[in-house]
Length: 116
Length: 116
Image (tube, rainbow over all chains, first blue to last red; front, top):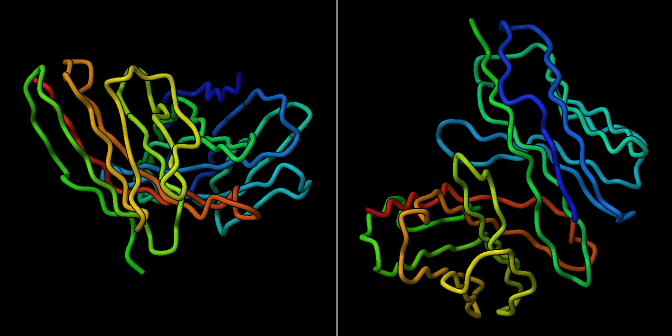
């Protein structure tokens, strides 16, 4: 079975600090994608960053970057220079393509609060 | 371009009733997935449709069903509602096929269903 684990239910940092959210996953697939989604109080899930498993280079999107360790099945998200607008639930997710069927498997989420 | 539209945004139903939720995907997207989000269980996959065919189904009872129309719009139906069906139901659309199978899933704002 494919599972995603986020071990930090809640985190809180001061504005402008750097914060790292952890995620581990379990799969027997060799080809898959990993995502970090953000869900602010508005409930809209928004993609933060995406990583292709066959790419060794870690993905980056402005202040957001990942540390992808394929052998360890680890996919952490680093937010640099955190801003008040980064306050949200963050979900790590995994998708593979088995016989054309796809589904996102989500972790339980990390509630991140950025304090002024 | 317009995002994923879910209707209605809020719904209150009585135990034993049935409910139909609607999702209009982004134009050109043929894959529509449904997720149930609750505080206790997190985000759980319900089913995925592609070109009017259900490609994948999560571990939910038969009371949960769905369909997709030729214009890719999708509906999900829950019959004989139970109190435990109270949740946020999220719909996501993506291109979801061929070389795009790992593409970003775009989410709607969800339908908040309350069963009383």
